[in-house]
Image (tube, rainbow, N blue to C red):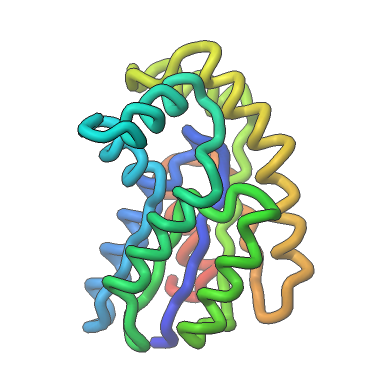
Length: 197
């Protein structure tokens, strides 16, 4: 099996975390290679839950308001994870970056450094009404009405252009998946796109 480098993109509530876990299980079952799973949202929430430093307090406040976290913190989180965990044999699954076009050059530099030039992007295309309802039902502390609307706004304005960039990037395949399908059907579509079915 070829080494996989997969970026998951979709609005919050589109099921990225669930699908990463399902794909990770498939890769681990079929291949002896390690799977490095970097989900920056989880890392931000872990920092916010600690609130032992000034930075962690600020992260908690900004998460609750739904604003996009600063690029430098996002880059530090995924950069440290790659430096600590990634090798030339591991599969890599990414969620939570790049969220803006401005974050792409740093990630491209990392891909070049780690010799990962063939990239798959899973675009979980999910209507706002669907993800809004999902976020409202999961009862997470940072899922207030205002923060949900703010996250949807910046997804439209900042993250959708990232998908269009990847459609034009050499050696990159974008797989558009209907995020309104059942969890199992979304998973099957992802496996088909990655030629793992």
